[in-house]
Amino acid sequence: MHRLLKFEFRRLFLRVSLYVCLGIVAVPVLFMFYITGTEYFSKDYNYQITLYSVLQSMISVANLTTLSVVFTSIFVCEDKARGTIKTIYSLGYPRYKLFLAKFLASASATAIMYALIILFGIICGLLFSKPGNSSLFDIMGEIQTEPDIVLFIVQQFFVIMGAHAFYFMVAELIGKTGLGIVLGIFVPGLVSSFVGVLTAVISAAAHDNEKITEALSNGYITFLQYWLPSTLSSFTGLFTGSGGVDLWISIAVNTGYIIAFGGLGMLITYKKQIK
Image (cartoon, rainbow, N blue to C red; front, side, top):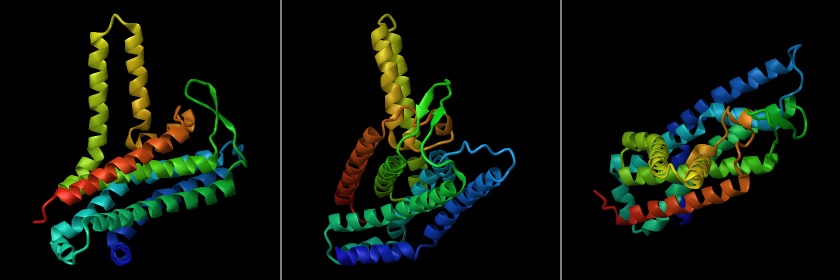
């Protein structure tokens, strides 16, 4: 296993695509750093920005989920496209070890991108934000308390790792870079739309029962809050706090995604024939 990990990580850090993705992450993050600093030194700045809101802004502008699906698809499908996967399998390694080595290497790439965002976000926040947590108004005008920063960073990490596990599974199943990217990007949204339509149909059928309709509506909202990268920070979060998301539940749910999609990916690796 050690030799496989060494091989995959060496291959990882030799990929030009990794450094391209890191550069794409860095550009908007550094731009946000510049904007925040410029605002800080302006005469009208009133110290309302917090470390939490800075981190949210950094995560939002970086568009990490899209970069993760692009890099993961390239990394996973590259061996299949070049035919080198046959040589790797011919060395006699168990398939689960091959899967784990590639999975951990690609997950590390996504983690490195995330770490870059958080590093610049923390530096920017410490330089230009108001120290400590504070309350903020959501879009309804209600006061919400910002979550613990460490817990927020951990929760966002698990969200992106859950999304990565899904992207990896799709890439392993499809085996084609372009199609893997397209499906990785659009399938989560299609699932959300399907659940929304199904909820609407059932609600329409039960229009005389307000309790069922309300339960279905609340259930759909909860589903959206925890479905794959839906809880990843966005600009909307600057006005809605954590958007009603329980960070501990989010961590648990996304841990389940990592296990479920990772397990399905390994099953696909075992069942798929090498051509």
